Length: 62
Image 1 (cartoon, rainbow, N blue to C red):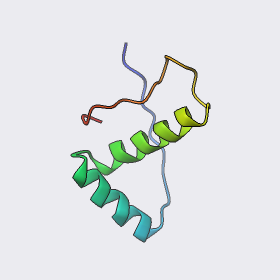
Image 2 (image 1 turned 120 degrees about the horizontal axis):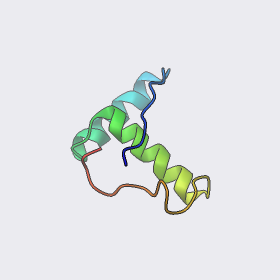
Image 3 (image 1 turned 30 degrees about the vertical axis):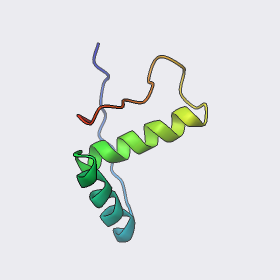
Image 4 (image 1 turned 90 degrees about the horizontal axis):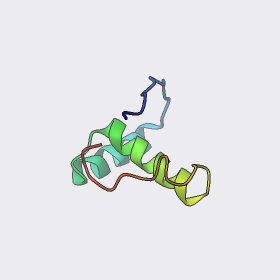
């Protein structure tokens, strides 16, 4: 079952965005997918996501 995606406007510092773009390029992801990946990883590691439902995705398809 696919997870519903919701659009969300994001204001971000230009230097942070540039760094995210480089990181996304290294990981063969879009910037949007990279930001979502990093957020999901941080939430999971800090116990903010329910176990098993939205565990971080390790593939690079974003």
